[in-house]
Amino acid sequence: MLNAVWLVLVVGSVVWAAFTGRMDAVQKAMLDGSKGAVELVIGLVGVMALFLGLMRVAQDGGLLLSVSRALAPLLRRLFPDVPADHPAMGAMIMNLASNLLGLGNAATPFGLKAMTELERLNPRPGVATDAMVLFLAINATSISLLPLGTIAVRAGAGSQEPAAILVPTLLATTASTVTAVLVHFALRRRRSYRPEACAAEARDDTADLAGADLPLPPLDAARPPASARARLLIGAVAIALGVALARHFWTADAAFGPVLKDVLSTWLLPAVVVTLVLVGLAGGVKVYESAVAGAKEALEVSVRIIPFLVVILAAVAMFRASGLLELVIALLDPLTSRIGFPAEALPMALLRPLSGSGAFGVMSEILKSQGPDSFVGMLVSTLQGSTETTFYVLAVYFGAAGIKEGRHALACCLMGDLAGFAAATAACHLFFAA
Image 1: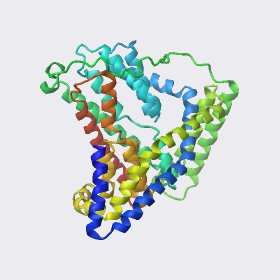
Image 2: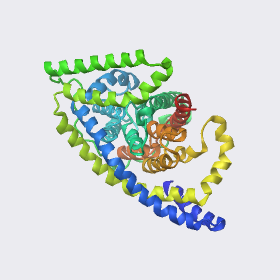
Image 3: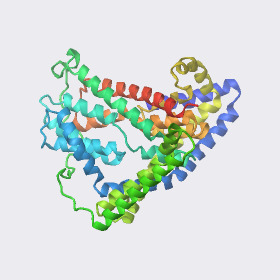
Image 4: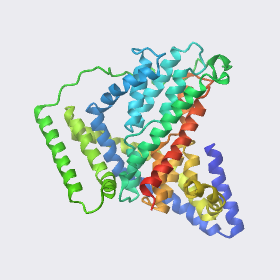
């Protein structure tokens, strides 16, 4: 699908420019877009390194295990067919906890292990079980507490309020996850989606069982308590921040609502940074060394995304310079404006379920052209942080377990995406509309 999208962008731009006399603009945009992609990555490396380092500190300090323990009771209710002590349950808990904290790199291996272990419990090999469908529905629409990757991109684009999307993203991902779960329970008993009604093909025994041997840390593993000195420092910082926050509200001249918005947009990210560092301190982590180890990953990530960004940003720049984007916006704006969704954000909404790297490139281009703190910039940032690359997730996870019949998994994920888009639009109007 992404091949078709990219082909339309490039070929359509050149053909349309040939008829409208904008070939010189398309040529310049193609070169500038390629150059701008590399400049964007260079500006992004520093912020990404900082956030990856902070998350590594918190992860080493036990934050991932703590969130996993909190999720365990809920998941045991949602997946009654999976034994509580089965490796599949442990892998699902670790996967969803990683997604919740924005640790996408850590989430994928646990997700692959969960699918392969669930397949070992499957009475009909090759046909997705209820547990598989529900797990993927939650995974692909996961509630996000810390969309640090998107925040890093916003900061790199020069945003004055890079963390302003935290609350809208939380609202949007909550809506998408709840919707996906409800759709699963509504469809799983329909005759056309029942496992026995799905004609499964023979299982491919050469399926990639990546992650099958991944060791899972025990959820009941005891961690050494924080030292007295660490507890004293953590308590002192918490008290100091609490007093400062109360003073800020007490001395503010504006009404409570605007002051609260200011706090959420300017205080939240520094508070998250301090919290992550203190989590590492409480876990006895050497915070500096751990942060440096995590920051090194930023270089690998940056190098990996450069080709995707160059290709997609060049195509989008050509599309814009040719005048085709203006034509599409003019055609769709009467419809999208009625529901409060700007047509400029439509490329992001259409591409996000298909390609994470492609959507990342489109978001970056929109932030550059529209401004990261514009309404459109806020909306596409929220969409990036609150939705997943649905088709990629389904293909990789089902492929790892050798599943040929996914039943209603796609319907659950796409309905979750739709709910996430609607909730992101509503939340952005609530927080950012003029």
